[in-house]
Length: 292
Ligand code: GLN
Image (cartoon, rainbow, N blue to C red; front, side, top):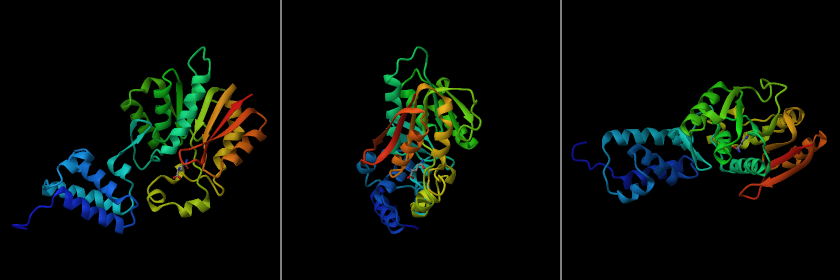
C-alpha cells in the first residue's frame, strides 16, 4: 500500500501475541518474541532495544508464517528447530520429543551414580529411547569418561541424535544403535548404568494432553499403553540381565507412576536398592535402582 507506514517490532509483537492468545496459546507474548527474534536474527533483548524499528516486507512474511504455524499449535521448538536442555542447544524435529526440563533430574541422577562409582575402566552406559540424544549427550558432558550406547526404535530420531552428538562435540563417546528397547541390543552385553525416559502417557492422559503435544510430538515417544506402564514392565523384566552386578537403572516416570515402577523393580528380586526422586515441582519423577 502506497503511503502506509510499515509496522514496527512493537506493533507486530502486540498484534501477534493477542492473536496467539485468542488461539489458546498459553505463552503468547514469549512465543511471539522468540519467533520474531528468530526472523530478525536478533536476541529477545534486542527486540526491546529496537522497538520502533520498521520491518521490511520479507521479514513480515516470514514472521506471519511462523505465527500461523504457532497458532495451529506447533511448538516453538519445532518451528525454530532447536531446544535447550541442561545448558546444551539440541536440534529437534517432529520425529523426537522436545526435551523437558524435568528430564534434567534423570541426567543429574545418572551423573551422580557415575560420580559415586569407582571405575577401573570407562563405565558403560546404555540410554534407551534416546530420541534427540539429549540425555546421552548431557551425561557425557557431565561425565566425559562414560562410554555410551544410545538406542531408539526410530531411525529418524537416531539420525537427528547422531547429528546432535556431532554438533555438541561428543561423537567419539556415543555409539548409536537402532533398537526397540532391548530388542536389538546384544543379549549378552552388560552395562554399568542403564537410563531411559520411555513413553509413559496412559490412554486417559493421552486424551487430556495439550493439542501442541498430542498433535505435534511423536506418539511413539509418548504413549505407554493403557496404564502408561508397558515400557516399565519390559524394562523390569529385561534390564536386570543387561546390568553388571551393582549396575544402576535410572528411569524417568510420570508423576503418579513412581511407586508402581518401584514395586515392579523390587518384585524382580534383582535390585538391592530402589529409590524415588522428585523434580523441581516436587513431583515424583525419577526412579533409581541398583542391582545386587
Ligand atoms: N513428560 C512428557 C509429557 O508429559 C512425557 C514424556 C514421556 O512420555 N516420556 O508430555
